[in-house]
Amino acid sequence: MLSSDDRQRLRNRAREVLDRNWMGASTKPAPDLYPHQWSWDSAFIAIGRTHDRPERAATELLNLFDGQWANGLLPHIVFDPSASGYFPGPDFWETHRSPHAPQAPPTSGIVQPPVHATAAWHVYRNLPDAASRRTFLEQIVPKLAAWHAYLYRERDPDGTGLVTIRHPWEPGLDNSPQWDAILARMHLAPDAIPDYERVDTSIVAADERPTRAEYDRYAWLVRLFAEDDYDDAAIREACPFRVQGVLFNALLVQSGRDLAAMAREIGQDGDRFEAQADRTAQAMNARLWDDAVGRYVAWDVVADRAVDPLVSAGFTPLFAGVPDADRADRCVTTMRRHGFLDVDVAVPTYAPRAFGFDPARYWRGPVWINLNWILRHGLARYGYDDDARRVDASTLRLVRDAGMHEYFDALSGAGHGTDAFSWTAALVLDLLADA
Ligand code: 9WN
Image 1 (cartoon, rainbow, N blue to C red):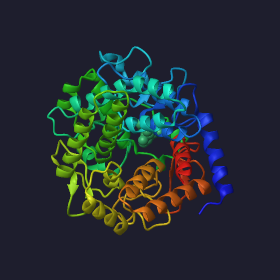
Image 2: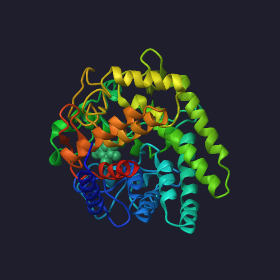
Image 3: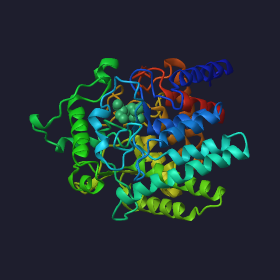
Image 4: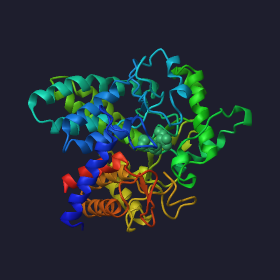
């Protein structure tokens, strides 16, 4: 248990980090490593900021949607034109080649997990008065509706209920072992690798980040999309990375339900969003459930097979109420059996005894606070309160002892990646407020 002094210190430190990373209308994820606005970061930041600066949280989300494309795509980065020092920047993305991209602000051309309606629901409930709550919903609901419509239209054109990601950056879990087999299939001749220079490894130790071979493929995919002028139909044909992700679809289910609730608050039809969420949840249970292990798996659409590595993302459907009680229990049993919950440092992003587990390298083992937040809510939703509390305690201990880091060594708890990381700070504020 943390003392009340510890809790107050953490709260103060979290607010300091968020204030320092505030750019006037949005919050950058970190001072040097990520100097622009990121999509799912802003959603988590808004959730945390609702407790002390709800107006700022509303501005954060609305500013992100200023970068939304005419076809509804919500880009994973909205660039701050006055900031530099991030690869890939606007010149590499060339999103002006798409007829849908806005003239300004400059953006990337891929997406991140749709947790925005859930964030908007948190913001809405914390705004101080009825008038500002209504204005916020009237502004944000149509933008969220266009975003979800893009996903169902362009990322699930066959109407399976499951939407598809097409770049390892889209699920937000960049170098997760889930994508290894797919990236290994992408044999790039040396002259096919685009010219580029990484910036990340001059800020953070290279052995905590993705490898050069992974970056070659990240960069190659970006160029493929640019050369296809970001045309969704062309990309669907050409892209070797097409995956129905667990975390992505789970967050879409919960966001669909939250969007339905918000639409109804302003007298609009919520049933269509609810129906989409139901279909996605059903499709997850039909296609992504792995009965042999007791968890959900991503689906590699190109190879038409399940993605095997045992990652914590496989339990995130708990967050959205996707499994029935029996499947939820199987998920929790798998978590316990494979070391996701029984270690002092919880929750590793990849099973600690799995091949290639690396406690300090990015999404290949380390603890990330946003996934802890998602999983603790999933556990609590099904009544696993002790496990949820264990995750909370571990989360707060990690940040107390190591600081507001981006991720934490899954064995020692040491802080890695950048310090002063915004979603760590924001979600700590949310956890402290909940407790
Ligand atoms: C690429 C900003 C983002 C997070 C991602 C995290 C990392 C970017 C990068 O940082 O990805 O989008 O440069 O590595 O993996 O989840 O949104 O914090």
